[in-house]
Amino acid sequence: MHIISALLLIACGVLAAAGVIVKKKPEAKELIEKMTPYQGVGGVVLLIWGLISLIRLLLNAGILLDLIPGWFVTYLLVCLVSIALGFLLGFSLISKYVLSKNEQAVQKGEQLRAKLAKIQEPLGIAGIVLGLWGLVSSMIWL
Image (cartoon, rainbow, N blue to C red; front, side, top):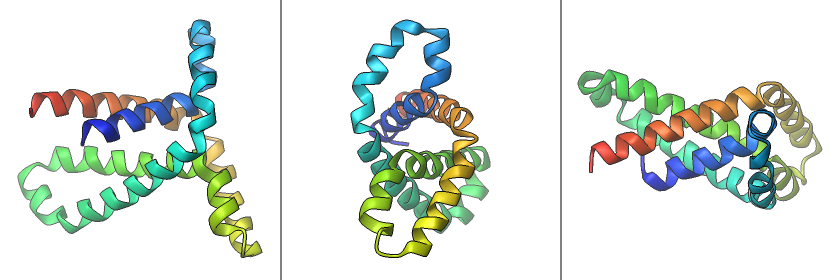
């Protein structure tokens, strides 16, 4: 995991888990409010990065499963959480620019967003944890 993608995953995780974070650390509210305007763009970038990473991971699955199965599972989780968080946080932009031409696509997207919204905070916490792990592991491998 690259340092930039780990930082993006952490930032999007913080936005998704803002409610839990602000309850425990009220002083974080101001910082989270500064990040909120960039939520849609960050979500779309994270979604695209997660999809590209998932494709790369699956193309190299055989080698990775043989050599480092734990890393494969961890990176698979990173990809899946990135895709889910990216879709959830970037849904307004995705709906406006991608899905708006097809009413059925908008409805399906809204249904998926509603399902993901139910687990938004746990996804955010998972994103923070996986992003932090990505930072630590990136520094170990430097």
